[in-house]
Every structure is written in C-alpha cells, then in structure tokens.
Image (cartoon, rainbow, N blue to C red):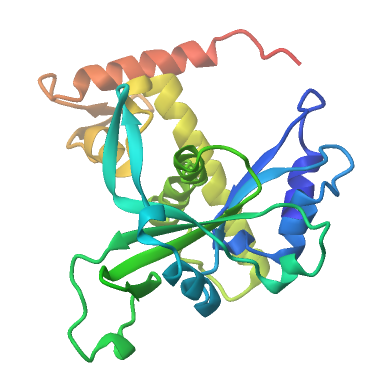
Length: 278
C-alpha cells in the first residue's frame, strides 16, 4: 500500500480515475480495503483486479461450482472470438476479512481452470510439487487453478484479459537489466556498492533504449543487446593509428556497413541538434 500511495502522489493533476492490477503479491487485506472502500482522498474508490491466493478454502469453493457455471475463456483476435483451453467461473467465496461487516464493499472472486496435460501418476498426487496451484475436480481430472479478486463490474472475459496486461514490458525490462547488462550479478556484499552497480545498469539500459530508437531506427527498438552486439559491436576490423588518430577499417561488403554509416550520421545529427526546451 505504501508503494501505491507513492505512485498516486505522482499522478498528474489532470488524472481523475485510477485502476490497479497486481499479481498475488497485492493480495493484502489492507490494500484491497483501501481501494474498495474509497479511502484515498483524491481518487476515492480504486477499481482493481488482483490475483487471489488459492488457499484450501478457495479450492473448496471452486469444487462446489456447478459444471454448467464454467465458461470457456475466449480471446478476440481480428474481430473473431477464439476459444482458449482455460475456463472461468465466478465463485461464491467470502473470506473472514470480508464477511465481518454488512457494509463491506462487493468483491467478486473469479476462478480460472486449465487441464493438466500430464496428469500425476496414481498415488503420487500427495507428493506433487509444481510452480502453480493444482486440484483434482470431480469427473474432470487434474487442473491448474488460479484466482482473481476484483471490485470491477465488467464482463469476466474482459476482466481477465485486462488483468493479464498488468506486467506490460516490465518483466522484459528486468530480464534485460539482469541478464544483458549483468545487473543480476551483484559485485559486493555491501549495500552501497550494489546500489551504485544497479544505478549504472539502469543508466546503461536507458541509454541503450534511447540509442536504438534515435540512432538505429524503430526496427531495432525491440531487439535485445545480443542482436546489437552481433550486428554492430562484435565485428572484425583493423585498427589503424595514424596522425594521432585511431581508425577502424571494416570490409565495405560487410552486412552491417551501411547500418554503421547511418548510425554515425544519426549521432552527428543528434550532437548538432537544437537545444532542448526547458
């Protein structure tokens, strides 16, 4: 909730409505109540979709859902509805933190199930350890099961796809920082040293993102550093020192030759561009 409040404090003045989505890390009673009960002075009720913990009580509620109440999850592609392997159902689930007051806001709990392609062997279910929650449904076999809690009043299909947009490109950005720029391998056991290492990595990430867009072009915006190294950095060439200058000579027929020339012209144009307005 501290992070949410800090984020809300940075919202521009023109923003009048805020929505929140989070994985199960956001499944915290204090946070959900803050949003649903409209405790924020500026934005009031904050609509949300948050991953719900699949507890034994929640699994019991899922098991009580009638088969007719399960619906195939559909995704709209090119104006057509495409059925997915997953199914969803609204679950009658009232945890203790909701049922203590008649004035409590409305919370909707959504269950999502997906058949396990490789079912556990008989007698091995008690020893099954998977990175996602599972349960055996009557006459349906073993399924992955997930939960979502929300206070939004929109169709469940739309809610699920909106909820799944929560990560955006953040996880990809974290992967680039940790793997491509080595920020995931901290150099020290001292906090300050590691904080400086992280800050340098973030600066390098931002510089790399800007240069791909402004120098290499839009086609390079989504490429990882491995592709940049292969096309631009790790090239064979001859270093020539003459008249106090260093020159790198490349073969003119090299596939990256024209790309390098365009990049240098773009960098020169940036260097001689108009000053930024303040």
